[in-house]
Length: 335
Image (tube, rainbow, N blue to C red; front, side, top):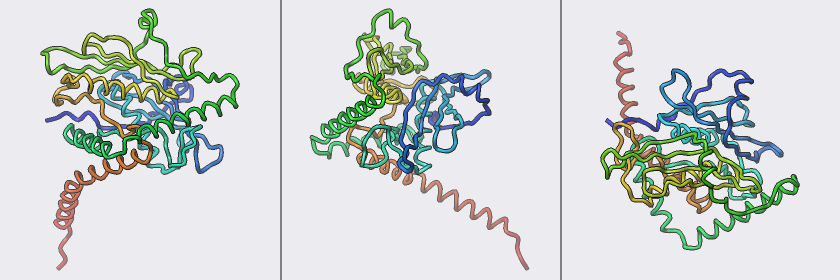
């Protein structure tokens, strides 16, 4: 029996304002409300934590400006999974509210781009996820060759305009677009890893691959955020890598994408080191933001929803038939 690890569980524990202020928020994104001039939504994600007497990890997150500013927690079996579930919780919150939102400073006329895409792990197992990922790759293959270049050019221009607009508001903002300098040995030793995952190598009995992630950081004299990660035991490269982004949340998301990409390129068979999981189930799924723009991403998300509906419809219909028979048997007879 495959162990369920993708169940998204949320909680809203009672917290005082003082306790809430003590949460170490590590990533933030600001979104504009398109239904209210000047309206702003702020999303924050905190460090994953293992509370006293708890049985699983939890990651705090908060969405301010939608009406409910309470702190929520996403739970899971390891610290990286708790972060992933927090990002999923944010995505679904925005989907359910239906409020039109846009990443602050981005002039996007195509629709609501919050920068929180759906991923392919819908909780229905590895085979379902791999089928969805193949479908996405097939759709990519149908696109015209210049599509990615056009979309990337649009993104670069949007980021440039956003930085220029921010600089006009705040003269202290530096308009620097340079890659982060390499991490020195002394800096590496100071890195505080906040989340990790252990993976078993299926090609070597007893061998373990360890993934670690740090909190996003903004290097001095830079305005590009970076989120450190390292992968130990996959090969000779045990150095620190970075996911970069225009805000701290984007660097966190790109670090997760970078880990998945590294595993895909290595070709090493891996399995999340949890009982009952399958080979090549690392817990780092593909997401629908593939660099082809919002329209493509939305189409892929609709495709995933259709596949989920196709999968669960027979289960729902069987449940409805059983419920109808149960009610029919329980109905009192009239003479």
